[in-house]
Image (cartoon, rainbow, N blue to C red):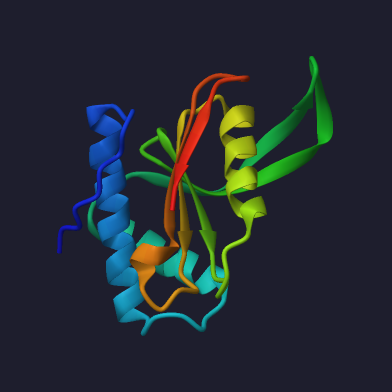
Length: 146
């Protein structure tokens, strides 16, 4: 199943990767019967879908937290980094919270990456739970789409 989403400002490779991630998320949502499960269940199932589709990813990636030029003794834990290009943050909430997109933007900034997807499996219609972020540089403009 292909879902027609546009990603303004995204490079061709990242658009392709995101389409594959979103298609895998749709399959995951359908096969698990929609909302109502814990975040970690959706994460594990999405990883199985990505593996089945031969899409490379890393799961539960520790990202050191930096302050100025110092590395703090704290880490962010990223849900997924797909194809070493796109951070995927997974949620399972009925309602969206602005802090979820803010969290993804912070992860992108700290990781030095540009592209991110927020996938909220807590929605009845998964498409309503997908948002993307383009974060350009430390003080760059970020764009999000809900």
